[in-house]
Image (cartoon, rainbow, N blue to C red; front, side, top):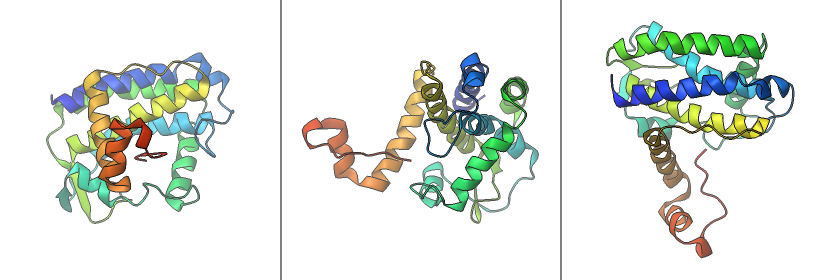
Length: 212
C-alpha cells in the first residue's frame, strides 16, 4: 500500500470517531463555523470525503488526459469562488443530503465505509479517476486520495471548532502533505512575496494567505 493511502485511511478513521462524538449530535441543527452551512451539512460534507473513494473505485477507468495533483488544483474553478456559486451551493445541499437520516446513521455509514476501505483501497490498482464536475481530464488515484486527505483534515478542524471540541491529531506526515498542497495553492493565489512574508516576517505579513 502506498503511503498516501495509509495516511488517508488513518485520517478517515479519525474523522469517523469525530463524527460519532455526542457533541456532533447535540449541535446537529446549529450553524457551523462555515458560512451558510449547518453542523449537519458540514458533517455530511466531511463524510462525503470518505464516501467519494468507493464511488470512484466503482466507476469505469476514465479515458481523459491524466494531469498532476497541482495541475488539478490550478484548474478547478471553485477555489476562491463566491458562496452563491452553483458549485458551492451543491456542496452545501449534498452535505445536507448525505446527513439527512441523522447523526447516528451518518456515523454508522462512515464507520462501515472506512472498514470496507481498509481492504479495498490497498488492493486498488494504480489507475486514473475522474469526477463528472471536472473538465476533460482525470488524475491518478493516489492524487485523488491526497485531495481527499486534505478535505478530511481541513473539515475535521472545521467540525471540531463548530462543536467546541479539540481538533483531532493527525499523523505528522498527513499534515505535512496537506500543508504542502495548501502552500502551493496559496502561492498561486497570493504570489510568492505575500506567502514568504506570512511565513517569515510577522511585521510585513499580509492579512491572509488562505489557500481555499
